[in-house]
Image (cartoon, rainbow, N blue to C red):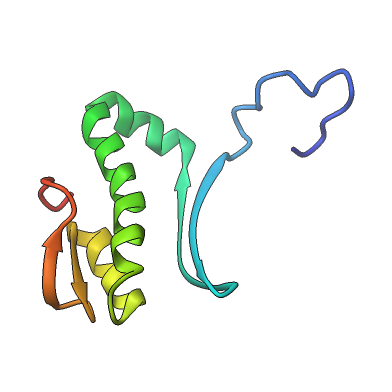
Length: 103
C-alpha cells in the first residue's frame, strides 16, 4: 500500500485510493485472460443484487475449470465468461456452467 508506515498499516484505505481486484488466467506462465474490477463499483453491484454478483464471480471459477478440458481454451473461456456457456473452440459442444442469463 502506498504511503504506509508502521503506525498507519492498519488504518482504512483512503477514499481517494483506488482498490482493484484482478482476475487473471495463465497457461504455462503466459497470461491468456485478464479482468480488473474496481472495488467501489463491486460494492454498488453487491448492494443492488448480492446473489447475482456472487454467482457471476463463481462463474469465473467454473468457466476456467471447464475450459481447461476443451479445445481452444482461450476461446472457450472467453465465451463462457460472457454468457455462461463453455464450448469447444468457443462454439461447439457447449455446456451451461450456470443458470444465469447474460448479465
